[in-house]
Length: 377
Image 1 (cartoon, rainbow, N blue to C red):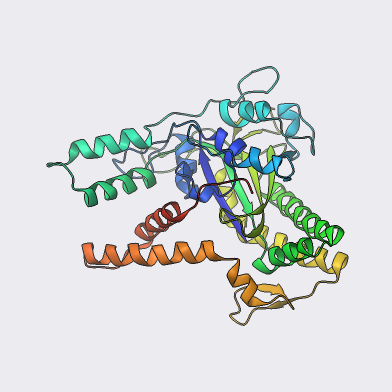
Image 2: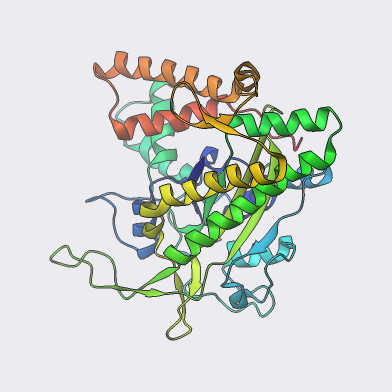
């Protein structure tokens, strides 16, 4: 599975210390079209005042640091555009260098700006305060919760980086955990290696098809058309973060690839913002490249055979008990149960089912409301 989330400026500490489930982060910009509009400085809806969280990671958990201390590998650099920041592919991702590149948008050694600094918009707290001030009466607790949800999910957010989260099907993580439990460490390492190599293969595909920058003005003109153009970049600047469990401590191999929203233009060497919309049309192809590589590599190294699940949704390792996979998926069950509750409440309040936008907001609220604190285990 692949999820792509645009993350706003000010969230670099989350990348360093809390990278785990960025779709659960309130600084996420799920809609890549809106994210690119924010990067361009164009309004995403008429008369809308969009904003960005500026909490700067003050509330970030020490998830990554704790994970590294408990045995997870440190982050590493990846990509063909790393010359822009003076590092090499495979080099360990030093936290200070990551703060410079992904947080301050600066070269980690010289301190020179990597293109235009991210714009700053209103924070979640500022948007909430403005919404409360517009209420004719003091909002009830229920109304306040609605305003808080709107403030979290509505707002322009200057994009700092894109998080590509790769997760294999649950049977792969269960298989990996079983090998560890039985002491087959070499075989367990082969599972991790297959997953990591598949991520690299998928990101190489993404880089070859989406390493483009936007040149000129891409916002709306008087006639409602963009007048900018697109140019090829030298490559992407990425950091890779590996994890083997979810928030519930259940087995879940997953990797976060943070793609900087800056790249060097091949034609003139100028550093510009990526064309984030370019990720959308290739997302399914990137996911397919990853999933296919996992199957092939595990088959070659361990003789693992995959087959289509009875529901036809995905392919799992044959021989892994589906009941074990279900037991290791309590996080998803928690979110879905909470989403059902929020959807029912929405229908009761509005007299209709939530549309796509409202359901996305409810889904984010369900995820945030049910998540456990990260422990790094």
